[in-house]
Each structure stands twice: as structure tokens, then as C-alpha cells.
Length: 94
Image (tube, rainbow, N blue to C red; front, side, top):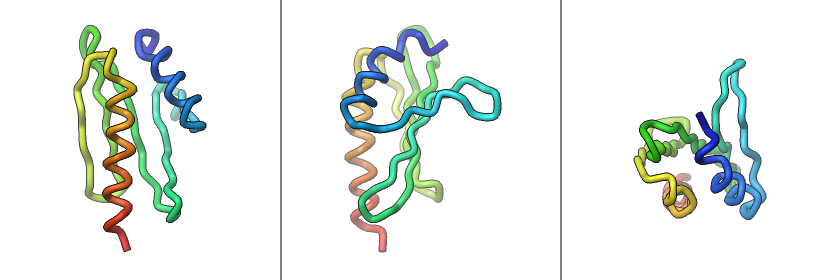
């Protein structure tokens, strides 16, 4: 299920020095817990949806959430966009 996105995802994870969670409650997943310098926690997760399309969701564990559906070849740029979104949310958090 994740074989088409794992190469680009793993490269991005390694470059950013992040941890990729690949299993949750016995199910295969692709999830990144991102903690900012302020200590605020966010989650990014990826779900292959259709042929060569992946759904990428970023949220703040509260109310803010953004969902992208992109071609597999845009995974890394979309993940970079997720980090930009997180930084904008983190900026306005008290």
C-alpha cells in the first residue's frame, strides 16, 4: 500500500531528521509527530488514496487541519508545505 510513496517519504524524513511511525495499533500507517521549538505538537500523516495520489493531512491535535491530495511526485514539496503551515500555526499560538 505504501510502497509507491515510501522512497520519497523516507528521503524527506532522513533529510529533516524526523521519525516516521509505520505502525499504529497493529495497522500499517505513515505518520510524523512534529514538535516545534516552542514544544507544540503537530501530526502529519499520509494515506495513499488512488493510483499515484496520496492524501496528506496536517493538524494541531485540536481544531486546525489541512488536507492535500497530491500526485506521489509532489510528496516532498507538500510535506515542506505542511511544515510551513505548522510554523504559521505555531507563530500564532500563545
